[in-house]
Length: 77
Image (cartoon, rainbow, N blue to C red; front, top):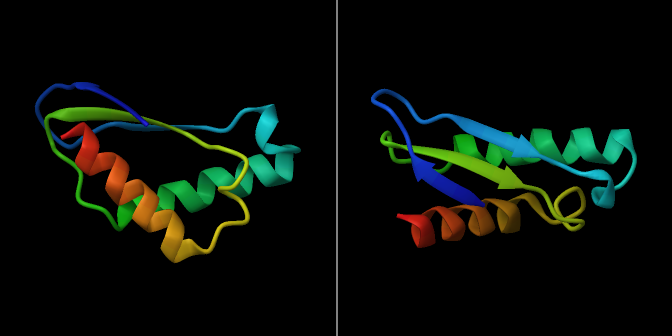
């Protein structure tokens, strides 16, 4: 996850899943799961985020995925 200073208002979030994650179906699943995990974690309004999916994202238990995202957001704050 990468974070940068953003403008006023709600944070912007980009989700990236490259071919290393797998085929189109796996990449889309990874992005959907990351978006839902991000919706469950409080984000700072003054930041923009770029989340890059790894190979484990499509198959990891969802609770673990939310914990990974929460930890990454905390480290960037």
